[in-house]
Length: 183
Length: 183
DNA sequence: AGGCAGTTGCGACTGATTCGCAGTTCCTGC
DNA sequence: GCAGGAACTGCGAATCAGTCGCAACTGCCT
Ligand SMILES: [Mn+2]
Ligand SMILES: [Mn+2]
Ligand SMILES: [Zn+2]
Ligand SMILES: [Zn+2]
Image (cartoon, rainbow over all chains, first blue to last red; front, side):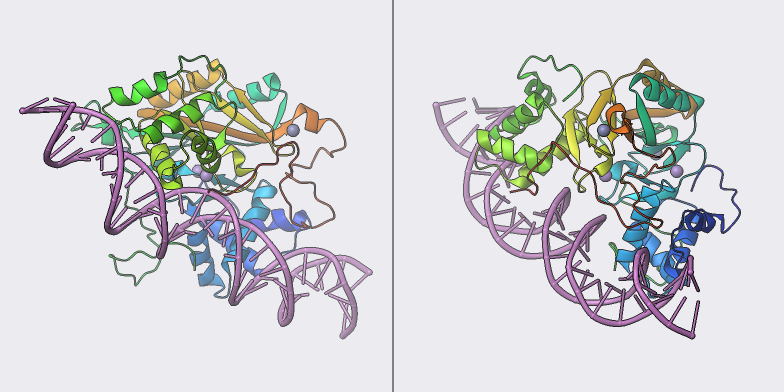
């Protein structure tokens, strides 16, 4: 869920076949899930959504496809500070790099692009004589709202945000029992 | 393994007890391992080394202690691009933040501190109205050495594509042959 | 249309990290 | 010093995330 998601639907697929990569139904489904996601999804969420398009998709296919897209630099993999669990999150990579801020208290994710970030990357390429393929800047901290008041000055300790829900997932799922992991 | 590791040995421990955290033999061992590490270690490597100091240490204690140190902002957790496996790496956090470059081909890790990076963080705090607790900038790319020659300009793939399509890829590795798994 | 390299679903598997619990230990206050 | 209780630990079992080998299948080039 990049900052500004204005893409011709299906263009994502074209990027693959242009590279001589076989375009299967499963891949199309996964691509479309990633392309249209409004927030960062992890593998199990991608699987769940992709299955709505092609019920037979297996988790290995999701992982294999994510690996493929990663290797080709078409998606980025994120930790988002591992606020809950150790899963990784994915997002389509567009022209402009952006960083991710995760509020250690409320779990909100904020995206931010900056000229300075671009400049820093150029500096690294030059000063370290490196050719950058992927740059991940992830920040953990406290958003203005959470910093509001009512917090002893000392307590900087992250209170892991133990509340996240996939709005568009498992429509008939009892609130008490969240299904985690990948089936 | 921070850029310049010039620390009074044992000072790390003091930081903990000052915060009213109980100082146990196991924690002392783990702290000393982290404090004296010359490179980034993952949990299983920390365990193995800590056991040389206190043979009874268990892996849960390592994880619990890493969690503690993380929460108190005394160590940073890194992915190092997950070049091999999904383990996380740890390093003592010192005054100055630095970024990590991982060569996708040879696996070499390079550290780099930059004024621009500091400035970027200040910009984020101001523009996003955020209070940063931890900032992780990890870069994947190709070092000068690996970029030497014999690589078509287009090829961003971590592992060279053999034919037209994508025959899968495995992380490159030379010079480092670590034993994996914990306990 | 035919063929086969590249893909997929399965199921079993590994590696990384977590948890409950019963026994142990650090640290504070006497 | 010394007792008491909260904090910490080892253990074993569990969970979670991601991987792998293999036989069946299919996109895509000719
Ligand atoms: Mn994003
Ligand atoms: Mn990670
Ligand atoms: Zn917040
Ligand atoms: Zn290299």
